[in-house]
Length: 345
Ligand SMILES: [Zn+2]
Image 1 (cartoon, rainbow, N blue to C red):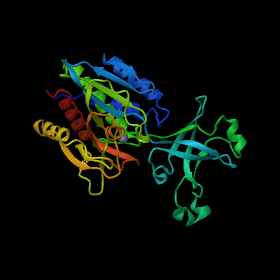
Image 2: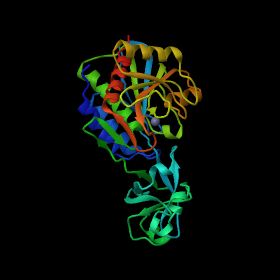
Image 3: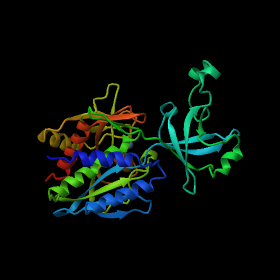
């Protein structure tokens, strides 16, 4: 398979740099709608602002639904402090330690962007000594220092900043000579890029899948909405999400992870086996893994009563929901397995 890795990494980098915390994903969605259009793929939009592209298959029925989420972790302003700094409420499952010292973008209701930094209230060792080390990081002890001349609550309000404003984290995208890709939100934008790379491969090679296939960009995965607006003829759903690297997990950054079970449910055994067999038949580096604290669009949806078969694959990512890292080899293995699945007869 001749995968266009330059296209994949370029698109990944571009969308990583468009901030999209859960609840404020429309800029990213607009960019991806454009991408579907440029690949000649018909796009549908849901009432809740998600989109999906559809490639018509050779046969009717047994349609397939592949999802990857564009929403990321982030935060929302929950309080303006008397000193003009901001208290935040998290969007998605993040540890405040993981964003300490990170630069952020504060987006006002009218769309103006201000920059700032997430810091513990007691940040300087010169001022607070050991308290800097021993204070637990949580919503109450962490604040945003805004890069403007604000000293009071009203100074901040005058900028137009208000409770309810979205706050997104600097994605800090880096692609190294050694092939590693680092960013805050590889989960799940790396998989979104994988999805488009597979679509582009089909287009470049004039391939038409047997089954009509829908490519869904979900927009509230980190909050657990699952997928919805599933077309009537869909019989199976494949979530593309990250494989968690670390501890005793089998996942690694150079392989595609096939998830056997997450914290909500085992995935369908037969469907998982088909994916394993496709990986073996096509010489694709893969790992079967059991994820500890984890849910995907597929597992969340079946728990909500969606009646389709379901599986989850994704590339191995180190330090998930922190400053994440994966490798180009893992991205390529992920694209190959996805193409093998789409073109399965
Ligand atoms: Zn994810």
